[in-house]
Amino acid sequence: MKRSDLFFMAIQNLKNRKTRTILTIIGVIIGTCSIVIMVSIGVGIDKTITSQYDSSATLSKIAVYGAFDEDGNDTGMQLDDSAVEHFRTIKNVKAVFPCFDASSYVEIKRGKYTYNYSIKAVDFDLMKVAGYTLNSGAFENADKRNNVFFGENAVTGFYDSQGNSAKYKYDENYKISESEIDYEKDSFTISPKIESYDDTGAVYTVQSTQFSPKKIKCAGVIKNDNSIDYDSGSAIYIDKSYALELMKQSKLASGGKKEKFAYSEINVYVDGLKNVPEVKKSIQDLGFSCNSDDESLERTKKVMKVVQLILGAIGAVSMFVAAFGISNTMVMSVYERTKEIGIMKVLGCNIKDIKALFLYEAGTIGLIGGSIGMIISYILSITANIVARAVAKRMELGDDITVCVSSIPIWLAALGILFSLSVGVIAGLAPARRSVKVSALTAIHNE
Image (cartoon, rainbow, N blue to C red; front, top):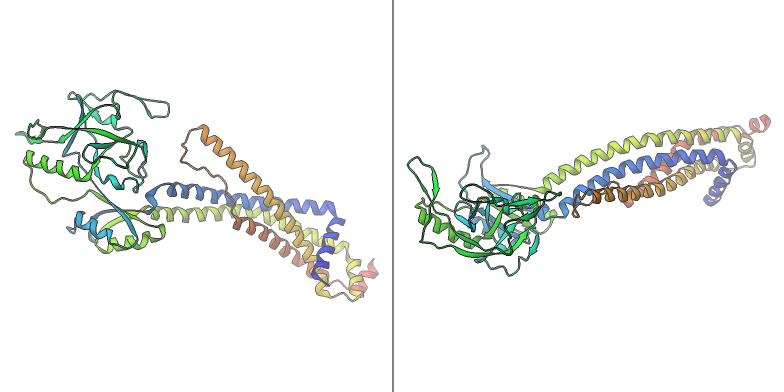
């Protein structure tokens, strides 16, 4: 008997028992939806977390710290210009972004207020590559000696000689809405910070006419993004080469000891996520300590795989219940069709075809239930995401946050239907075996 004939016979037999077939299919639909939706929640959470990494430059960033041996002792290797040049020669490195804190050597003022927080010396040309974004202004064509970049909350770091801060107000979203200092309109000055020590060893700042303050302007306001730089919202960024000049002037005027210069941190940016482990190993082989966000991403992915398995196992309970329903339906079908089986055997029908007929019926129930269950799962998934994004928008969580409560990729849809079909066939095995054991003469006689 042809497979197409077996399939059409299976469909016809199921139509003859509509009520029982529909109830059994509903069980499969519920089981399919349970598994798919549960797993899709895990996939959705994983997708949401991954998108947060992919939306920034941090995933391909390797943060390099000092060099330490196995016992945690400093090896003496410095994060200096020679280290920067060496990192640039490593294969698949697209940019090296050195940075140092110039707060001890540079003074920035606006009228009676002096900035007393973090002043970071960086390479303006690489700030965009490093993932910094601007609320206003532009990185391109910034004057390295006359321009600086302000963090959007840098006003919180300005204080007068009495310790009073500049005036500012926050709005309901905890963003500065009003400020006494206007980055783009106000005039600022920069000069080397000159410090001396009194008899008690306390540090105090002194004025010097040797280095007159220079006027600087705001080239742009940096958006607060802790994933790029923890101080990005409150720091002031000046050009690295200019900062080195001011640092030398500060040390000269303050009479400080000459020390070998070293960067406080160096960030290495790789041209692709897949190349991060290789580049990181090359840096570690040089004796430097480093880490990257791909480590936390991999740990998160492992956790999410476990979550998906647990959620899938919970949903599988419904499918196993549906499997018993299919098995029960097919067993009842064997009992009800004893005469039909006997006649098929008397007419010389192949035993394998009789067995296959029942397997086709069970598989068809699984296939139909799985397909309908998948369609419903997609509808539920899309609805859940629409509602979640509407709630997130209402809560003003931010435009850069992609909320995904449920995600059903192609592989999950295909796996869901295949699983439903397989459960149907497996559930029909026992009734199918029972059907071929029915004696033809006994079946006809009993009827």
